Length: 309
Length: 224
Image (cartoon, rainbow over all chains, first blue to last red; front, side, top):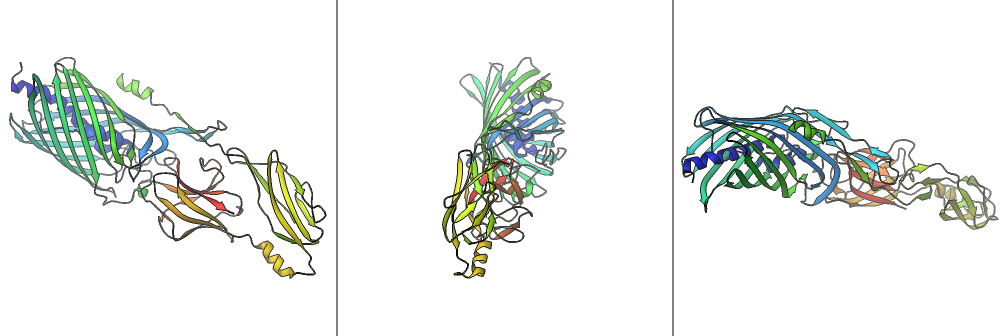
């Protein structure tokens, strides 16, 4: 049986993998949002990295969607769009209280399918794709309360608009939003046992201040995790509500379809497996169970992670 | 390896659009009255199963050749007072309408000329074909230039990233449609100029289309 301290350590790698998701937020074009939303939500939890420790992950995130939630909450079709994000994510403990976090999507591909007449077989509208670096996020996280019973942390993030917000033939493909944003977030987590299994629960809330006409957002979420031998299983429920204090979305053409004033409630199951003490793999899918102005198809991710102790 | 694997899968795929429409024949310059002794060139158009206009040769028929004669090219000659039905035929498609031939000695000629020149406006009741709000009335107004007028009752949403107006003969596709422009005013009366050369009867529908996502949002069929 593990000691309590060991349990926390075991949890940390999986919790931190969630932070990766948080970064995704920043990417939100609609495509991204879809992607991001599910994965992003879990970001970080209440734990921070001990000094000199770290967590690093190379992952691929993708979504292909031929329908979306409209502004009324209904589901409408759209020409199929896809986004593929290859990213590096890293957390490093500068001290036992301060952890630095980097999310760097170094290769993002956004594409739109061609449209072909079902009657004549002729191409009606050609397909399109762009590739670039994506929007990047830097975060500093502080462990406000770090006890064995409960942990409580706050973080500040800045989104760097490195992506292309107006790409493709019609300017509607994006690998970024073109806006800087700043997000403040609070996380509370607690570990406990379920029978003989280690488990944890987390909640968070965040305020995302966006610029360039994008509406600010309130984000919130709940996560439950379970450690079974070398497997980590967790489910996150994430929500985003828009303050709708930005421009109307029609102004966003070419900068992020549906990306402005988007709202959603998403569920993200994730499984991770530790191959060794330091190396592991993870996979997740995320889907919005309700939403407005986001894609209505699940996003998927898979990655390899490394923990530095 | 992971990176390469996933990006190899990220090819541009194909969406198949169900863009079939029933082929249609349309007489585009109907008139209701003629004066005996006058001639008139009727015109017709054929739109195939995608709504695209195709050049074809029509057969023209008159139900009363003694009243209103018409040749194979659609050139009509009013011969005597009475009623005649003109029919254009291509393949299995037909369209007919009735013309009254008047005696010029018994009517005000100017009034008849005015009736002939007055092609009335065409009106379309707008309805959404999506989950987005779109309602109101569109009027294709005979003027120089031709105008597309959205009435006071027009209302839609500003949530769409790129809502565009089209005139089309196929509401599933913009392949052969005429793009009028982006919608930037989301309620109330407004009007758009139609490019020179476009006729009042060239298009059957007004289409509201989300250009970035390539989907119809709302549509209205012009009447008459």
